[in-house]
Amino acid sequence: MTNTEIQLSSGKKVTLEEFSIKMTYNGLLVGVPNKQLNYKIIRNIIDSNEGLRVVFTLEGAYQDKERLKPYIYSARLSSEPIDKNFDSSYMYAVWFGNDITTMTIEQMIQILDIDWEGEAEDFKF
Image 1 (cartoon, rainbow, N blue to C red):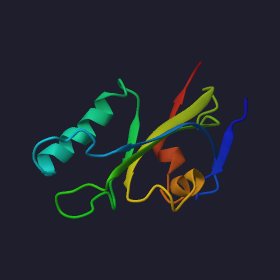
Image 2: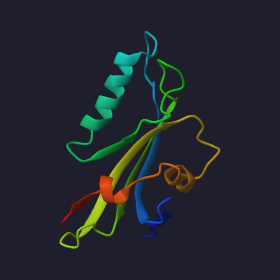
Image 3: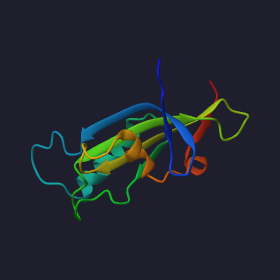
């Protein structure tokens, strides 16, 4: 099995465990995007992770005042533990973007400016 190692902008090396892209308003049949719908989309992402830590990057997430960017990106990342009493650390990062063809996955994750020590969570196997 080959793991994808990514170096964050901070220099921290992490392993990409999972990556996904989906359309933000996929399935919207009636109405237009608004603050209430956007809140529901964000809340559903958090709730769907069953209590696992989700780190959202909402800076730059909006195309305009009422509309989120068209794509939701998510990546489950892991690395060495922050506290050596644990086995590993992980983060489930979620952000919104415009175009899925202009950058590699590694480039998308590098520009997030992730504070691993402040945002990742340690765990034991």
